[in-house]
Image 1: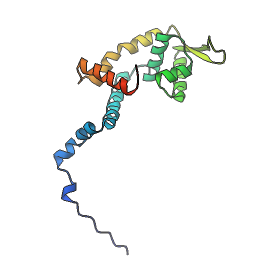
Image 2: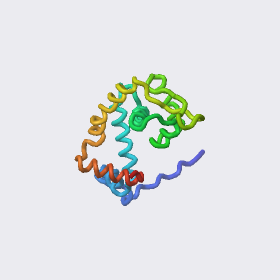
Image 3: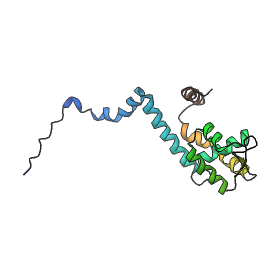
Image 4: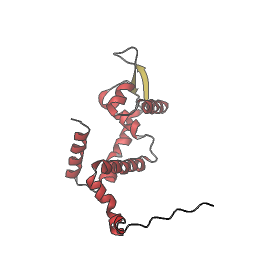
Length: 164
């Protein structure tokens, strides 16, 4: 027969009051910007998912189309590096865009060993549709911030990411 170990009595000093429990995350987020950023990223990602529900593009695909539209044909490696999308994810992203008829792979004009990803004429309307949703997405994700606070946030996050 095994004896059950005695339970330790809870120390009154170790159990925060209910009010303290309710405010714990608020205090933690103020003390730890890493925790706050992770949680904010989760909220923004959820907003993106909600905004894109029912649309034909993923966030990564939208970003790829936007970059190709803005800078012209690029290799998958260039897209991956500039957009900070893992190479393995980029392959699936480009495959999906190609299957949808929005991009095609062609020999890279400056590097015969590589392929360049190029927009098709069908990409234009898909990109316009995705871009039209950006203001709603920003309002959904950052609606509690004023325009000035959004600019400050953008500047500060850019500084963390060393984007100039």
